[in-house]
Length: 429
Image (cartoon, rainbow, N blue to C red; front, side):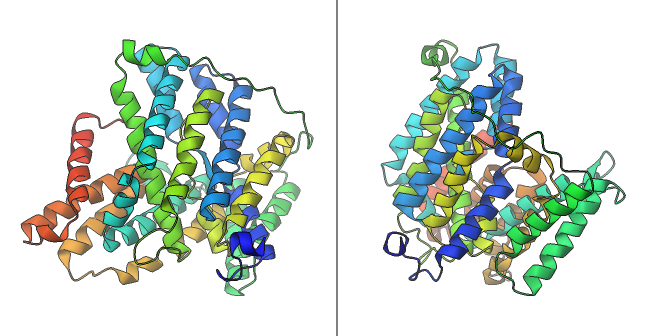
């Protein structure tokens, strides 16, 4: 295990990696319940999606662990499931047809992964945008944590406002934040996981955590009869493109963000990039045949990195916990159903991801503004891919008009144009 995952070389140990895996899993366990709940609105059987979600997560995460040796978990992405449901509702086609579109996107995704294009994308992104992506993701997940906790709520006048601090879930979230802050300030290892555990115990005694049993037999699984021909007969090419584009840049952005936070980028390049980028491509393709939407690298992996995770052993632990959750769905549902347990970890991890801002050349406008645009856009639009798109559009334009156009990699110009067309003509995709 020491040699396989290079624990000593990367400055970690088995205990730390296990704690990191537990932390990552607990912060992302909600996907097991939320993904089936969303897709069932499109008519997909809940039990089918439940098993498909877990199996695709196990497959993608194990590939990431064993072939890339990164502490990054893979699972069906949030946002894509909502898009899937909306497409079924608006296009007037069956969900089998849209799963056909997901499958085709996965195949294209896989083919692109075997080319140098995706590695070139990572290498072509300037350092300022890489730091901006990491920080933007930090604000994005912190904002998710604030919403989950009820500390921030929707408001018609100003979009958001401070929530009601008398709400039990909000009270528990605030208690969880301070517990975790104290543990972290005292430099106690596994502070995020311990904080979630203590918060869960307090939540139980507050009457907020309810268990309807602990274990259950997992539902049976079968492969879908994908309607790929329906994709062509209904001309759903923009749907395939939307799935492909968002998955590529969501995953690429997240991998860059997590790898940068874990100090795994080498001179701006990602070692073993092809293996890392293959993980979600395979999981997306297989997941479509089982009954779930495209997978992506999960930003909650940053909580495991913050807990000390540096290798694929963290991801192996996550995959094992997903497997166990097949038999412990009542327990997982209870924990993931109480947002106050995971919200504090997301908020605190968000602050950890701000570190890269000190490396940005803020006095150079052509570097500063595109970075600022990425950081601002991600949390406000609720989309990592949109934030990346804004960065890809503004960076080459400002560099070009500043007389520094030759400093920009040609790929940035190409994708800047693609993103501009997408936002102009397919803003909902």
